[in-house]
Amino acid sequence: MIEIDINCDLGEGVGNEAFLMPFISSCNIACGGHAGNKMTMSIVADLAEKYNVKIGAHPSFPDKENFGRKLLNMSPEALYDTVYTQIMSLKTILGNKGLNLHHVKPHGALYNAAVVDKSVARTIIKAVNDIDSGLVLYAPYHSLSAEIAKQEGLQVMYEAFVDRNYNEDLTLVSRQQKTALIDDADHMFEHMCHMILNGKIMTVTGVEVEVKADTFCIHGDHKNVLNNLEHLVGKLKENNIEIS
Image (cartoon, rainbow, N blue to C red; front, side, top):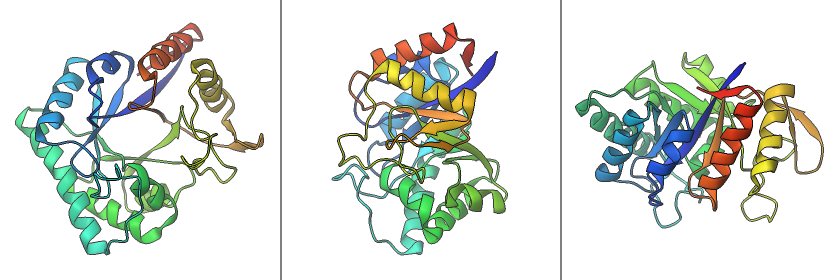
């Protein structure tokens, strides 16, 4: 039997967390940058505790207007301050509930920038390390964020996306392109299984590229996410792949 982690970005204003929690094993809670506030963080944390789901912080560029999906030009000092503050806001809420923060996964444009921008990656990793060097960073395989995190002593879980298509350089296809999203549950299953069983990803051009993944993300704000996630988890279990 194979065990894998499925994570989901939550607390982003959709309000479907209670339905998604039974099907995932870790969650990334928006902590005020692109979405979320103390109340939503608290609600999602309580649900995560109920379903024994690992809790992660989901910091972003401070840009609710664009849902954190626009690249902002910030100084390292300003970026450090917002990332540190966002993570600490969730960590404090968890601490008051006797819960632990397990990981950090940047959101949207910040996540993508850390993949290729050394300064952004180092700034995020410094903030994480300063808060708790025992935290795990969710980051893509062959990314600067993963490489620098390991150099700085952070544990890394390689992440891949179940509902997104990839370019040959392992970057995500831009959301501006019609081929960016995978909406069909059977396609998601095939996409994911190819990574799990073969260590390769089929890119949008039809070229296979080597990939490693310890955790797989499905976005909580995509259409039909509940039906797709329920179907996906059922298919995985049918093939002796357990969510853990």
